[in-house]
Image (cartoon, rainbow, N blue to C red):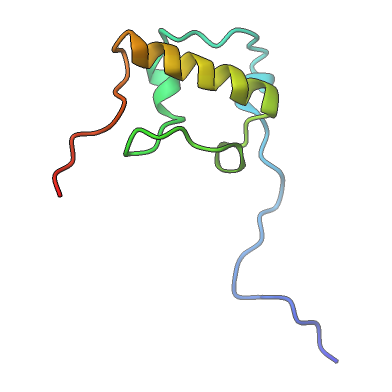
Length: 83
């Protein structure tokens, strides 16, 4: 019998690599808004590890930095969208 793999979807060639590990960043600065904004969705939600490719250790630190920068109003909690 033929192989039943889904050939319509292209396969990803490799695993995503943690951007913070590659750059040897130990402390994620909550004041670097341009770097932190990459890990937020359009609606202001924190993107999960499976989408961003960040390791678990840096994801925990990133979440803390995002929450801290929201508290001092560097980043928004939500966007201003009208229904």
